[in-house]
Length: 52
Image 1 (spheres, rainbow, N blue to C red):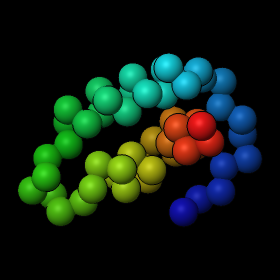
Image 2 (image 1 turned 30 degrees about the vertical axis):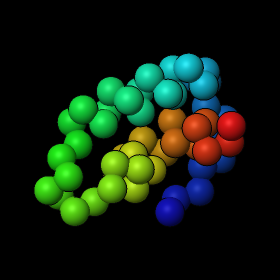
Image 3 (image 1 turned 90 degrees about the vertical axis):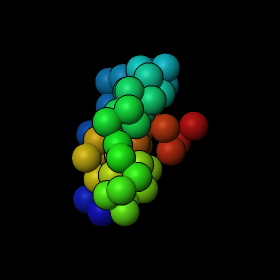
């Protein structure tokens, strides 16, 4: 995973909302968990959520 040195300028509420909205586009048939996909595709939001 890439290291993120930039502090995100987003709130925890914004990160949670983004995570929920992105799950609507995820299909289980892909064989990839939504969390793993989110960590890879949206690392700043994932960083905020994982630091709570």
